Image 1 (cartoon, rainbow, N blue to C red):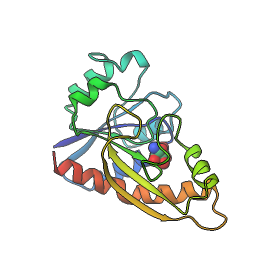
Image 2 (cartoon, rainbow, N blue to C red):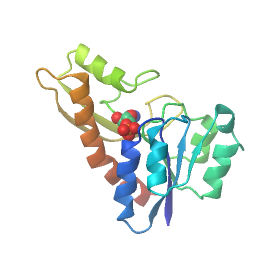
Image 3 (cartoon, protein in one colour):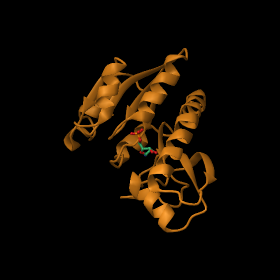
Length: 189
Ligand code: GRF
C-alpha cells in the first residue's frame, strides 16, 4: 500500500479530486490531509471522506514536531501539495527526496514564486497579455515553484478571458491531469 499525505491551505477541490480518483485504485490510500489554515474548506472535505486531518501551527512544522511525526506514523510515501501556501522546510525536502510534488496554476517558470498564488496568478497572466496559460506539476525544492517540472499542459487564452474564467479552465486541467501524474510518480518510487 502506498500512502499519500495532501497539504492544502484552501478550498481543497484538488484534494477531493485526488481522493476520489484513488478511491477507485487498489494499493493507494490518502492517509492524511494537513493544513495550516483552520478555516480551510479542505477540512470539511476530509471529514466527508473519512480522512484523518490536522491543522498545524508553524511551530509544528519543524523537525521532530507534530507534522514530521504524523508523516512518519502514517508511513507516508508521497507528499502532495494542492494549494498549499507555506514554503516546505529544507529538512522535509531532504527526508523525502523526489517525494514531494506541487501543482501550480500557470506555465512555470513564468508566474511562480512567493506571493504568486490564487487569483494573483491569473490576473497577472491576463494583464501581461499572455496568449496561453496552463498548469505545471513539479517536484518541490527549497524555493517556491522552482523544482523540476514533471508535467505541463497548456491552452489558449481567449478574447475577453477574465481571471475567473481562467481559474475555472485551470481547475479543469488540474482535475484531469493531477491524479494521473501522481499515480505515475507513485509508480516510480
Ligand atoms: C489550484 O489552482 C492550484 O494550482 C493552486 O491552488 C489552487 C488550489 O485550488 N496551487 P483548490 O483548493 O484545490 O480548489
